[in-house]
Length: 252
Ligand code: IPD
Ligand code: CA
Ligand code: CA
Image 1 (tube, rainbow, N blue to C red):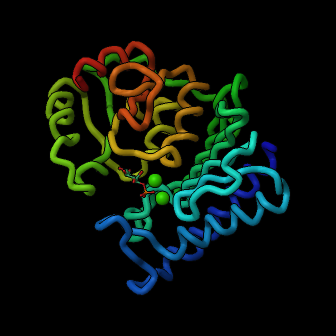
Image 2: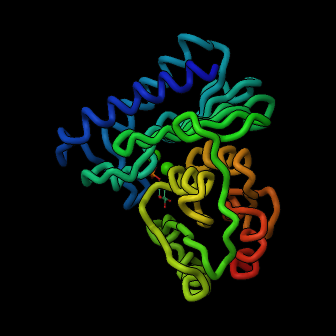
């Protein structure tokens, strides 16, 4: 399964790289109001679906663009074909392909691939997390020396109760903030210590499934804004355990 996942996500990355420079306005649509989707998002998800259906016809798939097929299957692939579509659309490099495999409702394997940056993250439950084949771990930094990352899907959705209040509470207390546009890659960066922590609200399962396993297998803690397991519905926090405990009070 590992080789299947890594080879197909690399191929999907080649599609992204080849098509990004060709994107025209006609290739871009808006869904749910102000959310961008391109023909490449759909093309990448279709490619991954075809590969999975070919090799594992009895597996389920939950994909951002294509919805859920065989949702009751014991094995289910969770796909965000391009996480960071806005970055992708405007020729930026900070976007990723996020694929996770859930077996009997537990995340079993995951990969986040940043084609433009040449960074391939992988994790297998109980077997650790890796960046380009090298084992990774979360940082040990605490709040006042931390680089945190977040996003603002809530603003895009017009939420009055949104991330700005949490942002304003946390930013004065940390070393620096990053908002680069791909939640999946943000969480992968937490898993390898490039970032120290991540939080966001209004994300979906496909945004965070792979990143959550990467962070957990890299020694981090992933939870909702109350410290429980209801993420991403109740918000999501991902960091080393000590830093997560320091962040949570600012999210209540
Ligand atoms: C988005 C990115 C972004 C996050 C948004 C997501 P998409 O995913 O992960 O960083 O802030 O909430 O929707 O839409 O590009 O797949
Ligand atoms: Ca996404
Ligand atoms: Ca997406």
